[in-house]
Length: 178
Image (cartoon, rainbow, N blue to C red; front, side, top):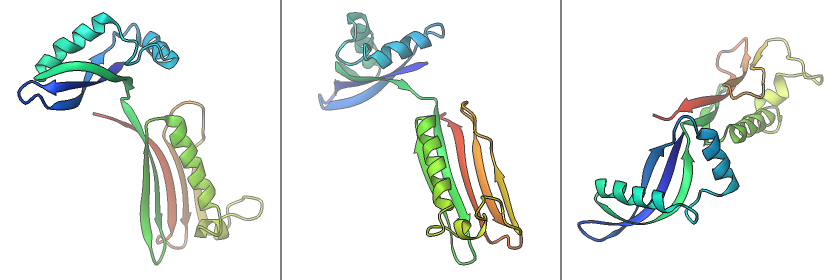
């Protein structure tokens, strides 16, 4: 787990005020403890200890910054979640993509995009692909990932089997931040 300290300070050479970030890796044995403290609001810019204050002041000198105070403390996320809608028809095409820090938010968007694609007023999918019982009509292909409670990549795909110029693909992908 990496903690992100957002700090205010002054550039040592020009004395200009600046905002900067210092990342500190928490010990591998204690990430759950830090998560619990963050969730309870006990580790924040108002309640950091004197020891952390001294450490941030010392680390700031490596950046040629005079440390003033901490604005916020956050957990640095190692992943983001990309939700993407790719579609193609005979006369148009497009990509819509959305980035989320939280898997559940990304999954909600993924589900809302599927609902929109099934709306006949919004997409060709809603008026042609599925019958009144939700079954796939002849001449169309449909694939869908099984949803579970774990964070995994998801895909929902509809294609016209007679024309490769018509498809709609919605994906949710976990992407590592390097």
